[in-house]
Image (cartoon, rainbow, N blue to C red; front, side):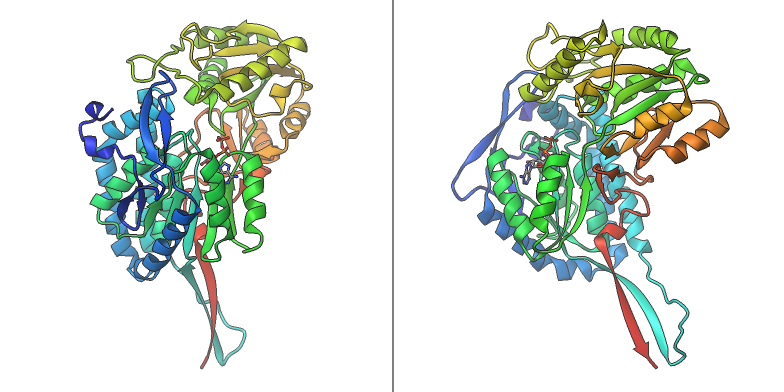
Length: 487
Ligand code: ADP
């Protein structure tokens, strides 16, 4: 795939430890495939626990030097990295589409979104401030300082191969931490290209380390990283199931944790909603990345009086989605990431249909074959169907009706998850009431798109711990130290 890139040297198959490209001692590699074509696109070094130890040591050795730089010095290097990412955006987007499948326009959007965290936190690096609260002891002073927590680990998923990495490592780096990253085995190429650009930006050796590994070795590496007393912080984005495992594995060493786990976003259309706007928001929220985002709308609640009008317009809009290989012009929905993902979508749809749901559109694999699935709408959905409480991670919109605000808020909150939620209304009182009542970390009002670097991203309940991005995102990587100074 080098020939597709303006700068072929952004294509890397080796891991990155202590500022150098690194092969597994065993010489072992794992295959990366293009989900749109099934084609083998890379053979990436398959590392294990031994190399995980080496990466942690490299990060430990780099920590003092990096932490002791001024915030401004770190900011300058991060800014250089941001500029290089921006200059190479097209190549990064191509690599991402090839390994992940999302349409090139979406990949280009993710490169800008991913880079925005580096820009934002580079700026924040200069603004870390402690405090000196007024004393209650006249002969002593209270000083509160903020200090980098230490060596951090980031374990990231395949649905946003770049942004899920930068959203974690940018605040960590800005705070003065060093990092070991374990990208998803399905999408390591975006991570490695980022490392190449970090090297060119002059980020010192050991500040960023990337451990590539297949699914099995990822589990072994995860155990090593969790058990290491040197690692002070673990940030994970992925399934709630794996989040629980990592949380338990971090208990013996009492690590600080940031977890961005699953979601099951309700999308509510009240009777006073602007239906055209709700339809546009629903399409964006549901079908972006083929429905493979943790903030995708998972359940639609549409007021009884506007249900038919909404479904009719929604079905028309969904017909305009063009499924295909994301590298081709005009494609708006790529494949699902792998066969298991396709099977889950099929299972959810079959379960809903067997329990009485009505198929409005889609409902089957695309004629293109592979892991392509038609954008799907189901109505007459009820709460006993799997799709209303398990995360589908696919392009399926299940629609239910409701009659009162109290009822829909109760239904919307009836979930173990609490990441994103959405609703459409024009009534200011209702907007405040619903925004306050929804038990979710994020509420999109009259919009289907909510993520940006300025806003705190994260969930409540079993959707996770902590917030990423925003002025709050850096505190995750800083410890407070209280100094009591006798005069
Ligand atoms: P998804 O459902 O998005 O595929 P997973 O939670 O399975 O997400 O995986 C997200 C990331 O977690 C990937 O980088 C994967 O390699 C890693 N991972 C999965 N299981 C484990 C584990 N037991 N220990 C450490 N990392 C894991």
